[in-house]
Amino acid sequence: MLLYYITDRTQFSGDENARQRALLAKITEATRGGVDFIQLREKDLPAGELEALAGAALRIVRDNSSTGTENRERTTRLLINSRSDIAIACGADGVHLPSHDISPADTRRIWAHARYPSRPIVSVSCHAAAEIAGAASEHADFAVFAPVFEKKDVPQATPAGLEGLRIACRHQIPIFALGGITLKNARACRDAGAAGVAAIRLFQENDIAQVVRHLKG
Image (cartoon, rainbow, N blue to C red):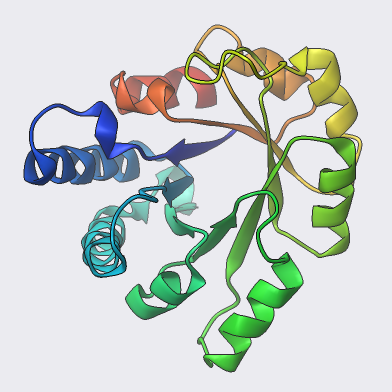
């Protein structure tokens, strides 16, 4: 099961500096714990502050990724929410596109024009079958499908449930389940066909090493 940590520093206490320190500590924990992807999703930050935070996060990811057991590489990838310019500037592994953002194909053209040395990872938020089909046709690397279960911060959103997730996973693109993901229901998402799960609270409110052992064990 692949694991995708989506950040939200506003869930931490203290002033802005304290929240950013707490977030970077959690990114360190996630990288050392073996989370596969981290999305830096701090959309309210001004561009300069976001670039500085992204640079600090990337240094942590690079410094703390290591080789796993049996000589298999264990590397965490850092994606930046929406901002290809900042992702390119700081040297991130790719970008996550919210729904109704530019297309994955246009995103790749931006990175190619910037002469980025490697192919970017592109993930896309999807809420319906048509959006998933579009992400697949545009050759996104994976889609994040939400909400699968009820989301505390968006109670009005109708959850797709496991059956909706199962239908979403029929498309020719890896799907990450998002929305109300817990240790109790994550394996059911995998059984429904998801390549992995994405979450904020699952990682920020728990010991990440324990979460990874539970879900990857």
